[in-house]
Image (cartoon, rainbow, N blue to C red; front, side, top):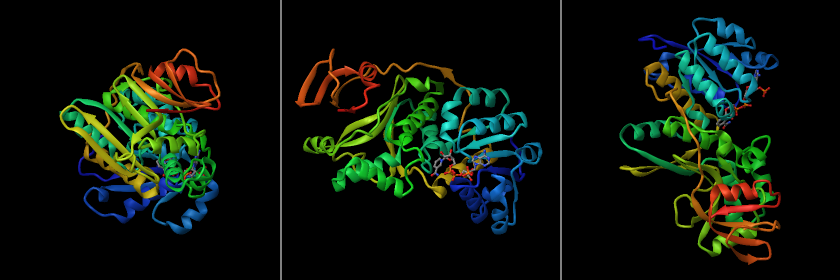
Length: 384
Ligand SMILES: NC(=O)c1ccc[n+]([C@@H]2O[C@H](COP(=O)([O-])OP(=O)(O)OC[C@H]3O[C@@H](n4cnc5c(N)ncnc54)[C@H](OP(=O)(O)O)[C@@H]3O)[C@@H](O)[C@H]2O)c1
Protein backbone atom coordinates (compact mmCIF):
# COMPACT_ATOMS: atom_id res chain seq x y z
CA UNK A 1 0.00 0.00 0.00
CA UNK A 2 1.66 3.27 -1.07
CA UNK A 3 -0.08 6.51 -0.15
CA UNK A 4 1.14 9.75 -1.62
CA UNK A 5 1.45 12.91 0.46
CA UNK A 6 -0.48 11.34 3.30
CA UNK A 7 0.32 10.79 6.91
CA UNK A 8 1.00 7.16 7.72
CA UNK A 9 -0.65 5.85 10.82
CA UNK A 10 1.03 3.12 12.79
CA UNK A 11 0.30 0.91 15.79
CA UNK A 12 3.21 -0.12 18.00
CA UNK A 13 2.69 -3.57 19.53
CA UNK A 14 4.75 -4.07 22.71
CA UNK A 15 5.79 -1.06 24.77
CA UNK A 16 9.05 -2.47 26.16
CA UNK A 17 12.67 -1.71 25.31
CA UNK A 18 12.21 -1.49 21.54
CA UNK A 19 8.58 -0.38 21.24
CA UNK A 20 9.00 2.53 23.66
CA UNK A 21 12.11 3.68 21.80
CA UNK A 22 10.24 3.56 18.46
CA UNK A 23 7.64 5.83 20.01
CA UNK A 24 10.33 8.18 21.38
CA UNK A 25 12.15 8.51 18.05
CA UNK A 26 8.92 9.33 16.23
CA UNK A 27 7.92 11.85 18.90
CA UNK A 28 11.34 13.46 19.40
CA UNK A 29 12.77 13.62 15.88
CA UNK A 30 11.35 15.98 13.29
CA UNK A 31 11.94 15.96 9.55
CA UNK A 32 9.90 15.45 6.40
CA UNK A 33 9.97 11.65 6.86
CA UNK A 34 9.29 11.34 10.57
CA UNK A 35 6.63 14.05 10.47
CA UNK A 36 4.75 11.87 8.01
CA UNK A 37 4.30 9.13 10.64
CA UNK A 38 1.66 9.24 13.34
CA UNK A 39 1.48 6.74 16.21
CA UNK A 40 -2.23 6.02 16.52
CA UNK A 41 -2.15 3.10 18.99
CA UNK A 42 0.19 1.41 21.43
CA UNK A 43 -0.69 -2.16 22.37
CA UNK A 44 0.51 -3.95 25.50
CA UNK A 45 -0.87 -5.97 28.41
CA UNK A 46 -3.92 -4.50 30.14
CA UNK A 47 -2.31 -4.32 33.60
CA UNK A 48 0.37 -1.87 32.37
CA UNK A 49 -1.78 0.51 30.38
CA UNK A 50 -2.90 2.74 33.25
CA UNK A 51 0.66 3.63 34.20
CA UNK A 52 1.58 4.22 30.53
CA UNK A 53 -1.39 6.59 30.16
CA UNK A 54 -0.15 8.66 33.12
CA UNK A 55 3.16 9.33 31.32
CA UNK A 56 2.06 9.52 27.68
CA UNK A 57 -1.16 11.33 26.85
CA UNK A 58 -0.95 11.75 23.07
CA UNK A 59 -1.58 8.17 21.99
CA UNK A 60 -4.29 5.59 22.56
CA UNK A 61 -3.16 2.63 24.68
CA UNK A 62 -5.10 -0.57 24.22
CA UNK A 63 -4.91 -4.26 24.99
CA UNK A 64 -7.53 -5.04 22.33
CA UNK A 65 -5.71 -6.21 19.19
CA UNK A 66 -8.97 -6.28 17.20
CA UNK A 67 -9.55 -2.58 17.84
CA UNK A 68 -6.26 -1.89 16.03
CA UNK A 69 -6.80 -4.35 13.21
CA UNK A 70 -10.35 -3.17 12.54
CA UNK A 71 -9.30 0.49 12.37
CA UNK A 72 -8.90 1.20 8.67
CA UNK A 73 -6.77 4.26 9.43
CA UNK A 74 -3.91 2.06 10.68
CA UNK A 75 -1.49 1.46 7.80
CA UNK A 76 1.44 -0.26 9.49
CA UNK A 77 1.67 -2.74 12.36
CA UNK A 78 4.98 -2.38 14.20
CA UNK A 79 5.55 -5.64 16.08
CA UNK A 80 7.92 -5.32 19.06
CA UNK A 81 6.33 -8.00 21.26
CA UNK A 82 8.79 -10.88 20.96
CA UNK A 83 7.72 -14.53 21.14
CA UNK A 84 6.50 -16.56 18.20
CA UNK A 85 2.98 -17.98 18.51
CA UNK A 86 1.09 -14.83 19.45
CA UNK A 87 3.18 -12.62 17.16
CA UNK A 88 2.46 -14.95 14.26
CA UNK A 89 -1.27 -14.70 15.02
CA UNK A 90 -0.88 -10.94 14.94
CA UNK A 91 0.91 -11.15 11.58
CA UNK A 92 -1.98 -13.23 10.21
CA UNK A 93 -4.45 -10.60 11.41
CA UNK A 94 -2.37 -7.83 9.86
CA UNK A 95 -2.34 -9.62 6.51
CA UNK A 96 -6.08 -10.24 6.70
CA UNK A 97 -6.67 -6.56 7.44
CA UNK A 98 -4.32 -5.44 4.66
CA UNK A 99 -1.76 -3.73 6.91
CA UNK A 100 1.97 -3.56 6.29
CA UNK A 101 4.14 -5.24 8.92
CA UNK A 102 7.43 -4.13 10.47
CA UNK A 103 9.04 -6.43 13.01
CA UNK A 104 12.10 -6.52 15.27
CA UNK A 105 11.38 -10.16 16.17
CA UNK A 106 14.08 -12.48 14.78
CA UNK A 107 12.58 -15.62 16.35
CA UNK A 108 9.23 -14.97 14.68
CA UNK A 109 10.81 -14.31 11.29
CA UNK A 110 13.28 -17.21 11.44
CA UNK A 111 10.72 -19.80 12.57
CA UNK A 112 7.88 -18.63 10.28
CA UNK A 113 9.99 -17.31 7.41
CA UNK A 114 8.46 -19.20 4.51
CA UNK A 115 4.87 -18.71 5.66
CA UNK A 116 5.36 -15.01 6.31
CA UNK A 117 7.07 -14.37 2.97
CA UNK A 118 4.41 -16.31 1.08
CA UNK A 119 1.55 -14.58 2.84
CA UNK A 120 3.10 -11.14 2.41
CA UNK A 121 3.71 -11.74 -1.30
CA UNK A 122 0.29 -13.24 -2.01
CA UNK A 123 -1.50 -10.40 -0.22
CA UNK A 124 0.70 -7.48 -1.39
CA UNK A 125 1.82 -6.70 2.17
CA UNK A 126 5.16 -5.02 2.89
CA UNK A 127 7.11 -7.15 5.39
CA UNK A 128 10.15 -5.25 6.75
CA UNK A 129 12.66 -6.50 9.32
CA UNK A 130 15.93 -4.54 9.46
CA UNK A 131 15.93 -4.66 13.29
CA UNK A 132 15.78 -8.46 13.47
CA UNK A 133 19.51 -8.80 12.79
CA UNK A 134 22.21 -6.72 14.48
CA UNK A 135 19.70 -4.28 16.02
CA UNK A 136 20.74 -0.81 14.94
CA UNK A 137 23.24 -1.79 12.26
CA UNK A 138 21.72 -1.22 8.80
CA UNK A 139 22.85 -4.45 7.21
CA UNK A 140 19.94 -5.21 4.89
CA UNK A 141 20.06 -1.70 3.45
CA UNK A 142 23.78 -2.12 2.74
CA UNK A 143 23.38 -5.60 1.29
CA UNK A 144 20.51 -4.32 -0.83
CA UNK A 145 22.69 -1.53 -2.27
CA UNK A 146 25.56 -3.92 -2.97
CA UNK A 147 23.44 -6.58 -4.63
CA UNK A 148 21.94 -4.04 -7.03
CA UNK A 149 25.31 -3.73 -8.80
CA UNK A 150 27.48 -6.62 -7.65
CA UNK A 151 27.47 -10.38 -7.12
CA UNK A 152 27.42 -11.32 -3.45
CA UNK A 153 29.92 -13.95 -2.31
CA UNK A 154 28.87 -14.22 1.34
CA UNK A 155 29.44 -12.76 4.78
CA UNK A 156 31.39 -13.40 7.94
CA UNK A 157 30.74 -11.66 11.23
CA UNK A 158 29.96 -11.46 14.90
CA UNK A 159 26.18 -11.12 15.16
CA UNK A 160 25.63 -11.91 18.85
CA UNK A 161 26.76 -9.24 21.31
CA UNK A 162 26.35 -11.37 24.44
CA UNK A 163 28.82 -14.05 23.38
CA UNK A 164 31.21 -11.41 22.10
CA UNK A 165 31.07 -9.73 25.51
CA UNK A 166 31.74 -13.08 27.27
CA UNK A 167 34.64 -14.06 24.99
CA UNK A 168 36.18 -10.57 25.19
CA UNK A 169 36.02 -10.64 29.00
CA UNK A 170 37.65 -14.08 29.13
CA UNK A 171 40.33 -13.00 26.67
CA UNK A 172 41.18 -9.65 28.22
CA UNK A 173 40.67 -10.36 31.94
CA UNK A 174 41.61 -14.04 32.14
CA UNK A 175 38.33 -14.93 33.87
CA UNK A 176 36.47 -18.20 33.41
CA UNK A 177 33.34 -18.73 31.34
CA UNK A 178 30.80 -18.84 34.18
CA UNK A 179 32.07 -15.58 35.67
CA UNK A 180 31.98 -13.85 32.27
CA UNK A 181 28.44 -15.16 31.64
CA UNK A 182 27.32 -13.83 35.04
CA UNK A 183 28.74 -10.40 34.13
CA UNK A 184 26.81 -10.47 30.81
CA UNK A 185 23.62 -11.35 32.71
CA UNK A 186 24.18 -8.57 35.26
CA UNK A 187 24.59 -6.06 32.45
CA UNK A 188 21.31 -7.23 30.90
CA UNK A 189 23.05 -8.42 27.71
CA UNK A 190 22.07 -12.08 27.93
CA UNK A 191 18.57 -13.26 26.91
CA UNK A 192 16.32 -14.58 29.72
CA UNK A 193 17.34 -18.06 28.57
CA UNK A 194 21.13 -17.66 28.13
CA UNK A 195 21.37 -20.82 26.02
CA UNK A 196 19.71 -18.89 23.20
CA UNK A 197 22.89 -16.80 23.04
CA UNK A 198 25.66 -19.15 24.16
CA UNK A 199 24.56 -22.17 22.09
CA UNK A 200 24.53 -20.00 18.99
CA UNK A 201 20.76 -20.21 18.37
CA UNK A 202 20.26 -16.44 18.24
CA UNK A 203 23.17 -16.19 15.78
CA UNK A 204 21.75 -19.10 13.77
CA UNK A 205 18.40 -17.32 13.35
CA UNK A 206 20.23 -14.19 12.22
CA UNK A 207 22.46 -16.12 9.82
CA UNK A 208 19.38 -17.73 8.30
CA UNK A 209 17.67 -14.37 7.81
CA UNK A 210 20.75 -12.72 6.22
CA UNK A 211 21.52 -15.74 4.03
CA UNK A 212 17.95 -15.84 2.71
CA UNK A 213 18.02 -12.11 2.09
CA UNK A 214 21.35 -12.14 0.27
CA UNK A 215 20.23 -14.62 -2.34
CA UNK A 216 16.43 -14.19 -2.31
CA UNK A 217 16.16 -17.80 -1.25
CA UNK A 218 14.67 -19.83 1.54
CA UNK A 219 17.09 -22.35 3.01
CA UNK A 220 16.16 -24.84 5.73
CA UNK A 221 16.87 -23.29 9.14
CA UNK A 222 17.97 -26.66 10.51
CA UNK A 223 20.67 -26.96 7.85
CA UNK A 224 22.56 -24.04 9.38
CA UNK A 225 25.16 -25.56 11.66
CA UNK A 226 25.56 -24.14 15.15
CA UNK A 227 28.14 -24.92 17.80
CA UNK A 228 28.21 -22.71 20.89
CA UNK A 229 30.68 -21.50 23.51
CA UNK A 230 29.27 -22.88 26.77
CA UNK A 231 32.15 -25.36 27.28
CA UNK A 232 35.01 -22.97 26.48
CA UNK A 233 37.81 -22.77 29.05
CA UNK A 234 40.72 -20.44 29.65
CA UNK A 235 42.97 -23.21 28.27
CA UNK A 236 41.24 -22.87 24.89
CA UNK A 237 41.66 -19.09 24.95
CA UNK A 238 45.35 -19.52 25.87
CA UNK A 239 45.94 -22.07 23.12
CA UNK A 240 44.57 -19.57 20.60
CA UNK A 241 46.59 -16.72 22.13
CA UNK A 242 49.83 -18.73 21.91
CA UNK A 243 49.12 -19.13 18.19
CA UNK A 244 48.43 -15.39 17.70
CA UNK A 245 44.69 -16.01 17.43
CA UNK A 246 41.53 -14.90 19.22
CA UNK A 247 38.42 -17.10 19.55
CA UNK A 248 35.18 -15.47 18.40
CA UNK A 249 31.68 -16.89 17.86
CA UNK A 250 31.47 -16.41 14.11
CA UNK A 251 28.49 -16.50 11.78
CA UNK A 252 29.33 -17.06 8.13
CA UNK A 253 27.71 -17.97 4.86
CA UNK A 254 28.07 -18.21 1.14
CA UNK A 255 25.48 -19.44 -1.31
CA UNK A 256 25.93 -23.08 -0.21
CA UNK A 257 27.28 -22.67 3.32
CA UNK A 258 25.80 -21.40 6.57
CA UNK A 259 27.21 -21.89 10.05
CA UNK A 260 27.66 -20.41 13.50
CA UNK A 261 30.64 -21.66 15.50
CA UNK A 262 33.68 -20.56 17.48
CA UNK A 263 36.54 -19.73 15.18
CA UNK A 264 40.23 -18.86 15.53
CA UNK A 265 40.76 -15.35 14.10
CA UNK A 266 44.17 -13.75 13.52
CA UNK A 267 44.78 -11.43 16.46
CA UNK A 268 45.48 -8.43 14.20
CA UNK A 269 42.19 -8.84 12.29
CA UNK A 270 39.52 -6.19 12.82
CA UNK A 271 37.11 -8.95 13.88
CA UNK A 272 39.46 -10.15 16.62
CA UNK A 273 39.59 -6.60 17.89
CA UNK A 274 35.84 -6.04 17.89
CA UNK A 275 35.16 -6.53 21.56
CA UNK A 276 32.44 -6.04 24.17
CA UNK A 277 28.90 -6.44 22.90
CA UNK A 278 29.66 -4.80 19.54
CA UNK A 279 28.60 -6.55 16.32
CA UNK A 280 30.52 -6.66 13.04
CA UNK A 281 29.65 -7.95 9.58
CA UNK A 282 31.96 -8.26 6.57
CA UNK A 283 30.02 -8.53 3.33
CA UNK A 284 32.00 -10.05 0.47
CA UNK A 285 31.16 -9.33 -3.16
CA UNK A 286 32.94 -9.65 -6.51
CA UNK A 287 33.74 -6.02 -7.34
CA UNK A 288 33.46 -4.20 -4.04
CA UNK A 289 35.42 -7.04 -2.37
CA UNK A 290 35.02 -6.53 1.40
CA UNK A 291 32.62 -4.10 3.07
CA UNK A 292 32.71 -3.99 6.87
CA UNK A 293 29.90 -2.69 9.07
CA UNK A 294 30.34 -2.36 12.84
CA UNK A 295 27.80 -1.16 15.36
CA UNK A 296 25.29 -1.62 18.14
CA UNK A 297 23.57 -4.97 17.73
CA UNK A 298 21.03 -4.29 20.48
CA UNK A 299 19.59 -1.64 22.80
CA UNK A 300 16.35 0.30 22.64
CA UNK A 301 17.21 3.35 20.57
CA UNK A 302 19.67 1.67 18.15
CA UNK A 303 17.16 -1.12 17.43
CA UNK A 304 14.28 1.35 17.17
CA UNK A 305 16.35 3.32 14.65
CA UNK A 306 16.17 0.31 12.33
CA UNK A 307 12.44 -0.12 12.96
CA UNK A 308 11.76 3.52 12.12
CA UNK A 309 13.97 3.26 8.99
CA UNK A 310 11.68 0.44 7.84
CA UNK A 311 8.58 2.54 8.50
CA UNK A 312 10.09 5.46 6.59
CA UNK A 313 10.99 3.23 3.64
CA UNK A 314 7.43 1.92 3.48
CA UNK A 315 6.09 5.48 3.53
CA UNK A 316 8.52 6.43 0.74
CA UNK A 317 7.77 3.34 -1.35
CA UNK A 318 11.37 2.08 -1.13
CA UNK A 319 11.24 -1.66 -1.74
CA UNK A 320 14.10 -2.91 0.44
CA UNK A 321 12.62 -6.32 1.20
CA UNK A 322 11.36 -8.51 -1.61
CA UNK A 323 8.91 -11.27 -0.82
CA UNK A 324 10.01 -13.36 -3.79
CA UNK A 325 12.23 -16.36 -3.03
CA UNK A 326 13.19 -19.79 -4.23
CA UNK A 327 13.87 -22.82 -2.02
CA UNK A 328 17.52 -23.85 -1.71
CA UNK A 329 19.83 -26.26 0.08
CA UNK A 330 22.89 -25.68 2.23
CA UNK A 331 25.72 -28.13 1.56
CA UNK A 332 28.24 -27.09 4.22
CA UNK A 333 30.86 -29.19 2.45
CA UNK A 334 33.76 -26.73 2.97
CA UNK A 335 36.90 -28.36 4.35
CA UNK A 336 38.91 -26.98 7.25
CA UNK A 337 40.92 -27.87 10.36
CA UNK A 338 39.12 -27.94 13.73
CA UNK A 339 40.32 -27.54 17.29
CA UNK A 340 38.37 -30.01 19.45
CA UNK A 341 38.36 -30.63 23.20
CA UNK A 342 36.28 -33.61 24.31
CA UNK A 343 36.50 -36.90 26.17
CA UNK A 344 34.65 -38.58 23.31
CA UNK A 345 36.79 -41.00 21.30
CA UNK A 346 37.44 -39.51 17.86
CA UNK A 347 37.35 -41.99 14.99
CA UNK A 348 37.23 -41.60 11.23
CA UNK A 349 39.16 -38.32 11.09
CA UNK A 350 42.80 -37.43 10.53
CA UNK A 351 43.73 -36.08 13.99
CA UNK A 352 46.73 -34.56 15.75
CA UNK A 353 46.73 -34.85 19.55
CA UNK A 354 47.57 -31.65 21.47
CA UNK A 355 47.10 -33.03 24.98
CA UNK A 356 45.00 -35.59 26.88
CA UNK A 357 41.61 -34.54 25.49
CA UNK A 358 42.45 -31.85 22.95
CA UNK A 359 42.97 -32.53 19.24
CA UNK A 360 43.22 -30.92 15.87
CA UNK A 361 41.04 -32.54 13.24
CA UNK A 362 42.70 -32.06 9.89
CA UNK A 363 41.06 -30.93 6.69
CA UNK A 364 37.54 -32.24 7.22
CA UNK A 365 34.16 -31.41 5.82
CA UNK A 366 32.12 -29.16 8.11
CA UNK A 367 28.94 -31.21 7.71
CA UNK A 368 30.75 -34.44 8.61
CA UNK A 369 32.31 -32.84 11.69
CA UNK A 370 28.90 -31.50 12.75
CA UNK A 371 27.15 -34.86 12.36
CA UNK A 372 29.87 -36.57 14.42
CA UNK A 373 29.90 -34.08 17.32
CA UNK A 374 26.46 -32.45 17.40
CA UNK A 375 25.16 -34.40 20.42
CA UNK A 376 28.44 -34.42 22.38
CA UNK A 377 27.95 -32.88 25.84
CA UNK A 378 31.49 -32.07 26.93
CA UNK A 379 32.54 -30.58 23.59
CA UNK A 380 34.34 -27.38 22.72
CA UNK A 381 35.03 -27.09 19.01
CA UNK A 382 36.42 -24.20 16.98
CA UNK A 383 37.11 -23.79 13.27
CA UNK A 384 40.77 -23.01 12.65
N1 LIG B 1 15.97 -5.27 23.25
C1 LIG B 1 16.81 -5.28 22.22
O1 LIG B 1 17.92 -4.72 22.29
C2 LIG B 1 16.42 -5.95 20.94
C3 LIG B 1 17.30 -5.87 19.83
C4 LIG B 1 16.91 -6.46 18.62
C5 LIG B 1 15.71 -7.15 18.53
N2 LIG B 1 14.91 -7.23 19.63
C6 LIG B 1 13.65 -7.96 19.50
O2 LIG B 1 12.55 -7.05 19.63
C7 LIG B 1 11.44 -7.70 20.25
C8 LIG B 1 11.02 -6.90 21.48
O3 LIG B 1 12.13 -6.89 22.39
P1 LIG B 1 12.12 -5.96 23.69
O4 LIG B 1 13.50 -6.05 24.24
O5 LIG B 1 11.54 -4.63 23.41
O6 LIG B 1 11.12 -6.79 24.62
P2 LIG B 1 10.41 -6.28 25.96
O7 LIG B 1 11.18 -5.19 26.58
O8 LIG B 1 10.11 -7.50 26.76
O9 LIG B 1 9.04 -5.65 25.41
C9 LIG B 1 7.99 -6.42 24.89
C10 LIG B 1 6.69 -5.83 25.40
O10 LIG B 1 5.61 -6.49 24.76
C11 LIG B 1 4.73 -7.00 25.76
N3 LIG B 1 4.09 -8.22 25.29
C12 LIG B 1 4.68 -9.38 24.93
N4 LIG B 1 3.78 -10.28 24.54
C13 LIG B 1 2.59 -9.68 24.66
C14 LIG B 1 1.25 -10.07 24.40
N5 LIG B 1 0.97 -11.33 23.99
N6 LIG B 1 0.26 -9.20 24.61
C15 LIG B 1 0.53 -7.96 25.06
N7 LIG B 1 1.77 -7.50 25.31
C16 LIG B 1 2.78 -8.36 25.12
C17 LIG B 1 5.64 -7.30 26.94
O11 LIG B 1 4.91 -7.43 28.11
P3 LIG B 1 5.44 -8.50 29.22
O12 LIG B 1 6.79 -8.03 29.61
O13 LIG B 1 4.43 -8.40 30.30
O14 LIG B 1 5.47 -9.83 28.54
C18 LIG B 1 6.52 -6.05 26.92
O15 LIG B 1 5.91 -4.93 27.49
C19 LIG B 1 11.94 -9.14 20.55
O16 LIG B 1 11.52 -9.97 19.51
C20 LIG B 1 13.45 -9.02 20.57
O17 LIG B 1 14.10 -10.21 20.21
C21 LIG B 1 15.23 -6.65 20.82
